[in-house]
Image 1 (cartoon, helix red, strand yellow):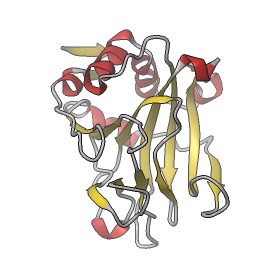
Image 2 (cartoon, rainbow, N blue to C red):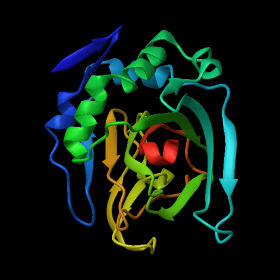
Image 3 (tube, one colour):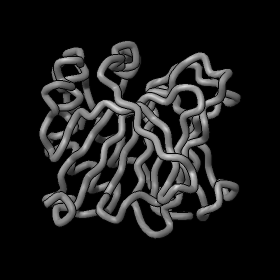
Image 4 (cartoon, rainbow, N blue to C red):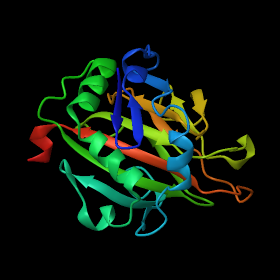
Length: 221
């Protein structure tokens, strides 16, 4: 089933036909959800304004991180100030993230019942030195999905998502570069360790991602 939202077709079958990995936890690398030139156009129109730096030093309690964020959806409601900064194509993406078809496809892939979960979404930029320490995601997050919007990203630029076998950043099972059109779905658990490697000074682009969380209703309330 390919669903068209304005000029941005979303192939939800890309989610439902993907076979998730179960080791070291349930996760999936999804390809083809933004078919044709859609991903390229979204990358060209990736938002540039309204981002806020959020950071926490490593070792100060909880995971360390440094990223710039633009909140697009909060408690399943589009953020008006953010929508004003988006192109029509990106506003269509926000609409699609709140659609029953998207929720059903994520539920099918993840194996999680998303009934009543609220949607949180934000665009994220990682400049030189940006990173996220190893973590498992909060217990209130039922499913997380991340899309990547970079063309020609080189390995020496860092910025890879690391799927980890444990809390040590050295226990790398898989690395996923932020290549245009690819997406990762994570099903949080006590074992769902992952991190984002620091973007190096050599990087000629900022790492650009769209991050979506389905949050359990008891936490959202």
